[in-house]
Amino acid sequence: MIETELKAVVDDLAACRARVERAGGVLELEGHLQDCRYEDEAGRIRKLDHVLRVRIFRGPGRSEASLEWKGPTRTVNGLKAREEIGTRVDDPAALTEIVERLGYELTRTIDREIAQYTLHGATVRFERYPRMDDLVEVEGSAESIERAIAALELPRAIFTTDSLFGFMDRYKARTGKRPIVCAADLGDEEW
Image (tube, helix red, strand yellow):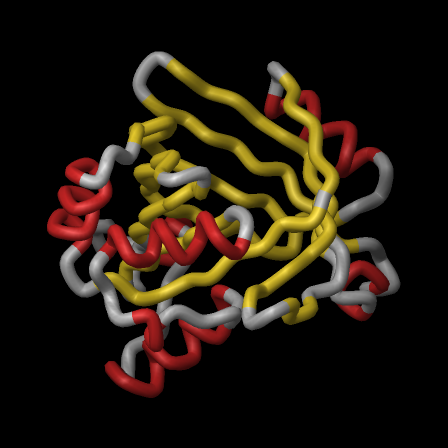
């Protein structure tokens, strides 16, 4: 499957969520989303611009995990596009152990609180990180992405194909603070 998406910084997360809900957005997930990214000993996964991750979602009365592979990033018609293959599992701990016993090493953990909606055929996910700007990711077909962006009532020009790391760099340049996307990196600070 080819995943296409755009992301943007959200200055007022509550107001954007309210606009999505008024436009008919259906809340699908709300809770904590953690990505555990893995690499082989030679660093080939990153060199190929691939991603191997275990994604774990925990929310009220619901938890799930998936193993996902993503292919190289490209831009198609102004949208970020990547091939993606994934499967869900019931036991995140067993999945993590299998990946690690195969020799993959955990290289990065990304934590965020999310609210994920379905709107006009697109997935709209609001993401709040330990210390960084709040983001909105809009995923779907080109047409559904544009309809969802219109419902968000955010300037179209702020949406980009940049990776999370591009947003982290801009946050640091703008604020002078180190962005934190892993809860464990907060130390004694509160999230």
